[in-house]
Image (tube, rainbow, N blue to C red):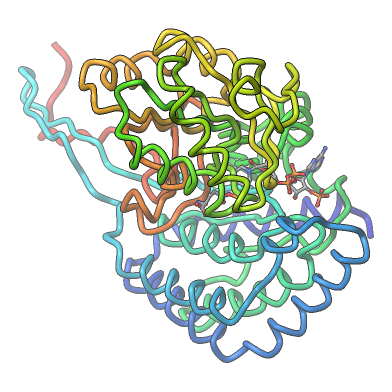
Length: 418
Ligand SMILES: NC(=O)C1=CN([C@@H]2O[C@H](COP(=O)(O)OP(=O)(O)OC[C@H]3O[C@@H](n4cnc5c(N)ncnc54)[C@H](OP(=O)(O)O)[C@@H]3O)[C@@H](O)[C@H]2O)C=CC1
Ligand SMILES: N[C@@H](CCC(=O)OP(=O)(O)O)C(=O)O
């Protein structure tokens, strides 16, 4: 395959489709979403077959349990994709909404109209349900999408692409409004991120290697969705029961997600009391613990953490634990090692909670809540493209609004500038 020619074709088709999608009505876009839901429901056995191929390939190439879990399309996950499409269809359409209208002294009225971004290129991990979520949010927000999922999920993604094409066709929209890249060659990523004529924004969801390449090579604006080195800090004013339950959930609810806690920080004032409780809870769940020197004075059997552990996103049943010198120590550690994704404090002390949320510079800062809750659905956005670790344009879980921009609209009646 001539990758450059293929991607140019994909880009040109997406640009042409973006114009049609942007001016389609809410009803037509919702019809496409609901028809895609029906197409997925009808294609369950094809999806299962395609996914079995991917899973077999994944096992052969030695994917770990967390990666295989992401890759798998169980019947329940297909149900969730269908339900997700219906939910996105039921969300209010952000496009065309005019806000902030004001009369200016000159007599003109000035306001802002919400508009699509255009063509959105998304590069993401081998998690096929993301194909549906990303497509549905792009479509609902009037954008065309070029989707490049992880290579391990190619068969599942192509099976999903057929359902998306059916849904779009049923609503009379161009099938090229959502294109799932047909090749796993990384050269296609290189093309996608250097086509400013055809692509308006790139959303890379992934780890450090992906981001390094995007930061080096992209010639299209980027909204980064990076790794999650997320922290829970247990303050000396924490309720021990809440602390235990939040810490266990943040680590063990799902190991492979970007909002999973990777480092637990414990205030030195309560370390002797809390660490044994935490230690037994994690060991019972099969989590390998790596601790700082002070942690190992209490949990004597665990491995020593090294400097590299504070920067590590394990995506696995491994947890680093560090005893810190109160809130100052916690904030210092987090602002040094966190990937600015999601960090949480457990405390009953209002003043400390306020300081934590003010001074920790991450896309979500939480009080007495599990980092696993950093999620578009949980935040009420309906779904999410991912969690932006960028500060410009969109930060944190990105839903419909993050895929739009605003333009000024001005109403005059023959007004001229004096
Ligand atoms: N903030 C967020 O919303 C999210 C963040 N993540 C993060 O993603 C990571 C885990 O996913 P994982 O699958 O390991 O991520 P990877 O970064 O390995 O892969 C993600 C995607 O990027 C592609 N890719 C990776 N490196 C390159 C490169 N150098 N050039 C071109 N394409 C590349 C992969 O393609 P290929 O298949 O060819 O490897 C895949 O499509 C974790 O760090 C996790 O936190 C995950 C989901 C959401
Ligand atoms: N929103 C997700 C987390 C973000 C995400 O997609 O993470 P990942 O499993 O790394 O692809 C969730 O809470 O399941």
